[in-house]
Amino acid sequence: MLRSMSTCRICDNPVREFLDFGRQPVSDVFPEPADIGTEHFFRLAVAFCGNCTTVQQVEEVSRDRMFPADYPYRSSGSAFIKQHFQRVAAHYLRTELSGQDAFYVEIGCNDGVMLGAIRDAGVRHLGVDPAEQAAKVASAAGCRVHVGFFEEATAREIRETDGPARLIFSANTISHIAYIDSIFAGAGALLDQGGVFVFEDRYLGDIITHTYFDQIYDEHFYLLSVSSVQAMARRFGFELVDVEPVPTHGGTMRYTTARAGERTPTEAVARWLELEQAQGLWDLSTYEAFAERVRGNCAELKETLARLRADGKSIAGYGATCKSATVLNYCGIGVESIDYITDSTAEKQGRVTPGSHIPIRSPEVFRANYPDYAVLFAWNHAEEVMEKEREFKLSGGRWILYAPDVRTV
Ligand code: SAM
Ligand code: TMP
Image (cartoon, rainbow, N blue to C red; front, side, top):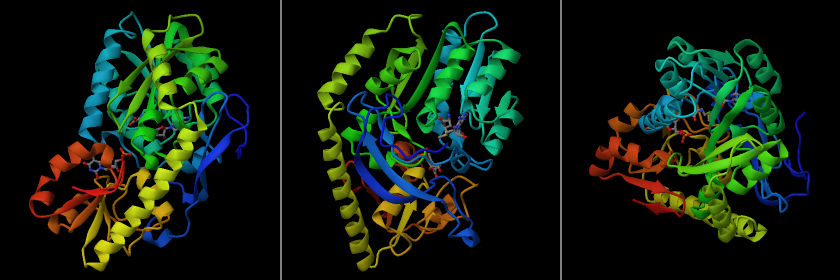
């Protein structure tokens, strides 16, 4: 059942709402122009639990709306992300998966970037993902995929047919799952004795430090931190045994958990807990100050675009990201300011952005006639995009960024 929460999903204590983005659409469903108006909206608001430090959304969106069969996100859309997962796979092939007949399960395998590297090594594997079209890309490449949502029942079925898993891995997915109790129960049922459940997700510390407010959208139900994952793991009979920062998506943390008592926590866990306390991640006032900065950035971005438009400038967006849904709908930015957004994902082209209805065009459209300015909504891929599009700047174009502050480069 979907819940609108005034108590914490992890520890049941009252939570304090600190930022309300108002009415927002499901961020990764891009309507055809003829389907404008069919979007599903919800109230995007985030709250802090002063007891266990978990930052979470107040209203839950149904998983079937967020992750339909034609969910358009593809991990392989970025060369950097592909490289990252190849490195992660190589690491686990040398470590957790090096034993005889190791079995690897991935939650949210999408188009199989990581799964493919595990398959190439001849290791037994299974990806689980409800996004059928993305999953088909993985199975067409020879990976074993179960199309569906990972939850306790799925985990039990997998254990029944394939036996225990040495490693359950998940990237950019666990934070999307409000029903986290079922995920840990599933991991508990599926993991081998001494096996690990590892997940990497956007890191709350980076979101707060850099005012990356657009990392808040429907899918990111939890904004995870070391202290909140420690509380979450404990609540469900697990233990956080290692943490490691990862250089993806503007700041990610990898959390290694194991059944309580099966592994000794590394010194990194204690060190990061101290850092988080010093950063104020355990204090409501930190989140209130963040909310104030968010309101300031949004007002300034809106003004900047309006001023450039008044001067007759053409403006495009780069990357029809989920992040852009929060920025565009919260700031009330539409085609009066941004002519189109370019995106390399074929599934998004020809459609419009949810709620703000800005047309999405291929990179060829962008390159054929550069705008004066481009708002970089895919700022987490800035290096890769700016390198690929260096001609844009050479021909006089300028990028607009809006976090940590609004600036033109
Ligand atoms: N792991 C990939 C990556 O890091 O690039 C994909 C991340 S994508 C943002 C999230 C993926 O999780 C989607 O493909 C979605 O369909 C999948 N997903 C959402 N809920 C899930 C669940 N309960 N079990 C398995 N996959 C899920
Ligand atoms: P993400 O920020 O959620 O990873 O989404 C990035 C979006 O930006 C995705 O729709 C693909 C798109 N993109 C481009 O259009 N060109 C690029 O060079 C890169 C890296 C991503």
